[in-house]
Length: 79
Image 1 (cartoon, rainbow, N blue to C red):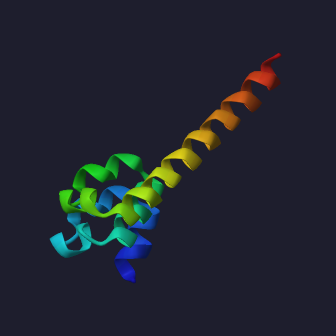
Image 2 (cartoon, rainbow, N blue to C red):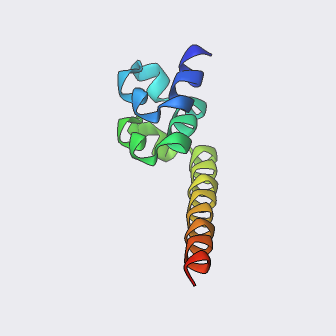
């Protein structure tokens, strides 16, 4: 619970987690939600977990859409 809160605030803390936590889909997704670059510290075995990959795909799509919407708002404000 403590590490879940910690990586939710700073995804790069995943690098300091135990290998067990680096294999935990919930911990890794929380870290990735905060900082996608934290995925480099995730255990590679998660790439075989279809449920994790589906959740990660949704997360990436959501983050991308958020960024696109933000960019569109900025561009519209500049017009």
